[in-house]
Image (cartoon, rainbow, N blue to C red):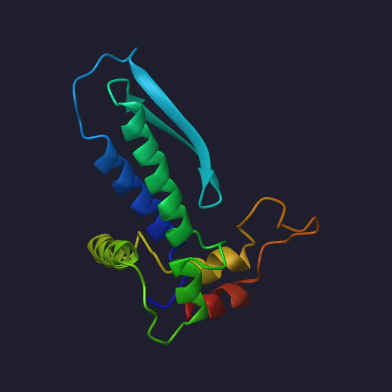
Length: 151
């Protein structure tokens, strides 16, 4: 994978959350919330109240681990290393390898509607960390978009 997989990160979070909370029957009034910030976005995870403090802690630890691996704004993440090593072999964690493989399968099944390679367009449109968009921002010109689509 040689392009910024921002969409893959989002898909990974969806799969991760589905894995964490397998469908169970539990009363709606017995829910716990984990609120946090990871991969440059705010998040809120709703969990069954039956989870122990240890299980909730494990979920929070796993989320922090995923942020360290998948956050494209972290200088040491797998995603940053992949983007920086475009066109070269880059060693990645098992989680990253599996997520990218699944992302490519979903991209193929959706005929490209889901595209894990949108990083160059995300950067062109200045979509990123809060406060990074300039005050005098303007949308990119069609020629710039076409150029980025070819990356």
